[in-house]
Amino acid sequence: MGGNGFNHGHSPELGADSYEKCMEALSSLITSHKRGDGSNREAKFALMFKYMKFLGFEERINGLNIIHVAGTKGKGSTCTFCESVLRECGFRTGLFTSPHLVDVRERYRIEGLDISEEKFLRYFWDCWNQLKEKLCDNMQMPPLFQFLTLLAFKIFISEEVDVAIIEVGLGGKWDSTNVVKEPVVCGITSLGMDHMEILGNTLGKIASEKAGIFKPRVPAFTVPQLSEAMNVLKKRAEELMIPLTIVSPLYLEQLEGGRLGLAGDHQLINAGLAVSLCRHWLHIKGHLKVEKLDTVLPQAFLRGLSTASLAGRAQIVQDKLGNSCEPSEGEEKSCGDLIFYLDGAHTSESMEVCVDWFSNAVMDGSHDYNARQSGALGKNHGTHYKGSKKNSIQILLFNCMEARDPELLLPKLTSICPSILIFSKFSLSFSMALFVPSMSRYHLVTSVSSAVRTDLSVDTSWQSSLQRTWERLIHGKDGILVNESNPEHSTKLPAYQFLHGDSSKINPTGKQLHGNAVVMPSLPIALDWLRDCAKENPNVRLQVLVTGSLHLVGDLLKLLRR
Image (cartoon, rainbow, N blue to C red):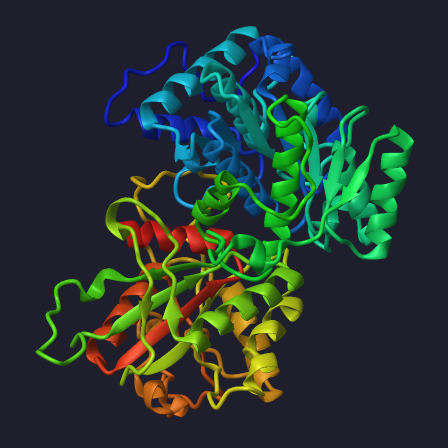
């Protein structure tokens, strides 16, 4: 029997520790602590068909009526819009996206909701045990994302969904989701330079990988692309003799006074693609006599577009630190405000979009809390602060994977909203930049109930490098690094003078810093510091942009939910 050291002959009983055992099993499928180099992708992809055969999915998968979406930017948002629209049209929907931020069950939505823990465990152990029983001696269990993809098919087949919306994980041609032979329709979102170590170092090579999801007799849709990418997509469509439709973004008038459920002007591009994919799906499945190409959106489409939600993308969450603080009559809360602006942007292009969104949200003075999370975060509603006497301070909370180039990401953040400053009397810039290590580890899959790391022995050398880059971009020279020269100061935190325009006093080591950037030992410590800062400065509103990594965003959401 194939294996990897983690073996269950039988499914564990559903109990308090069953879900954690499931997380341990998933973690055992991670073959590397870092993303692979892309070698031998074709051979690994070929194994997916064998796994599908073992699980009996080969023929049944076509009954899922799949919408398959690839791209560099916006594919998760596009899939989310598609799911919401078709659900509002009355169909039982299944949605598979990645990555998850807090809990692996976020990857699987049935009718708009994360799959329940009970159902997840049942389907997980069914897949796990079937594969364990049928693998030959020379075959291992599938790596993590392949297993998660197989589990998606298992869930959607078992739940008898009317439509499954499947987001490509990485690339397209050799992605594990591309075992789908006959989707109803394919979509390609905006393309850019990302995962170049795997997909290629030109836009044309990346486009070729994405176009790998195109299938004979299956129409494809895409958004406007740079010519280098568009030429590749068109050529592949011509080779397969399939239509490739270029979809224009929605415009605000089409929303009839409403707004998209996902914030940011760039979402009009993703929503436009989603509308076309849904219209075509409805037409092919016989629910539209004629595929409407007019600009008037049905009410079900408008409802779906306005209620779509996806955590960690242009999401605003107000921390609950003020819940126990009662304001005096005629006064604001006496314990301060702490607002997190969450966006997992991690490419140059997406960081630019993130900055535009953050700038508009802050400059507008309104907070559209579109988290729509259950539990500790609650359901948030828009609150206007125009005319507030509180002084708003912007703080950057940042980390990115070492595979990313901070020289491409951080310059987008050093000057916020330059395009709108011309028309505004306000000045907007980060008073403080906090660089923190992620809690997530590449060799573990965790859940919302998993233990949070509290040790401070994390290597922060990468974060120190990010700080140096930031200081150089701001001041043209490197700052003196906090916590690097004297480990005994590693738990001392910045003072709050920066709130009053004195950024020269934030260095906890007693040495002069040439700027306003600090390496924090851990994310929990950074969160506690921000909360204390807000509580001790009740006349200040802290607006914290959390970006650079979806792992960082997910880690913070996990802490906030606790």
